[in-house]
Structure formats: structure tokens, C-alpha cells
Image 1 (cartoon, rainbow, N blue to C red):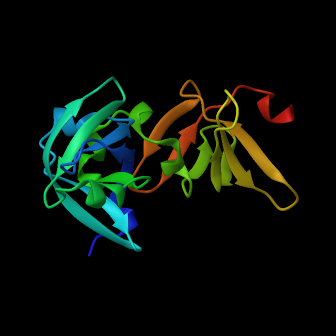
Image 2: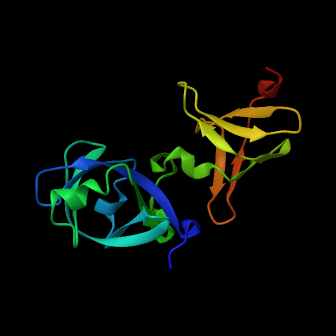
Length: 172
């Protein structure tokens, strides 16, 4: 059985394409094109299920069309609309950090290389142009910029993000 800790998100199914089970999808990483990825994983009724990739083709830089083994009709493809596309974490080391969906980082611990531990990221706020890591505190919450210029290192195995924030940023 596949667990959520064994996969990471790379995209989402948008809609069926045609009548033969092909689907349109968006993606944040094209790792499936650079590496030999035999299957995608989808959460269906609370269970993570692998589906072998029959073929795919690109429509743009972040969208494509895919066909999965066993999905041959428009009706079957409709069941996938809105589902997140996951890959096994074994491919994570081949993916650039900026290709990972930001929601993946919820649950990671945020540590400043000089100031120390900030806490565990509860969510990633993407409602503005400045993406923020949200860390609950005793009385409120910390909002830490998620800009790659602040990120020193990401340890995916230990789920830790090391940052170096500019002096005075937390005083704002």
C-alpha cells in the first residue's frame, strides 16, 4: 500500500480530452519526461493508487495530455478531474525545488541558519504575489516569505527547510 509520505505532488488533472480516456493535466515538473516514470499515483476514495502511463504529450510548458492504462472512455476520465497527480519520492532528488508544488512543504520544519527553529509550517499562503510559509505560534502566527532567495537548503527526508532571513524581517 502506498502512503502519502512516499509520494509528492507534481500536478492535477484538468478535464477529459476526447472520448478515448485521454486527459488534460497541468504540472509543475516535467520530471516524467526527463526520467523513466512508469506510473502516476492518484488518491481515489482515500487510497493512493498507481496507474501506468501509456502515453503523454505536451500542450504547453505546464500542461499536457496523458493516457493511463485501463482508462479508455470519457466517463472513466471524468472520474479523475480535479485529482492531484503524484509521483513516488524516489524521483524527488531529480526534481528542482522550484518545480515542487508549494503545498508539499506544509508539515516541514522551518529553521533559520542563524536564528534557529521557527516551527512547523501549517500551510503555504499563495493568495498574494508574495508566497508565505505560515507557522502557528502561541498567540498568533509567523508569516515567513517563501522566496527561493531566502532558502539555503531543503532536506526532504527529514522534512526541514533551512532559510537565512535578512536582519529585521521578522520585526515588520
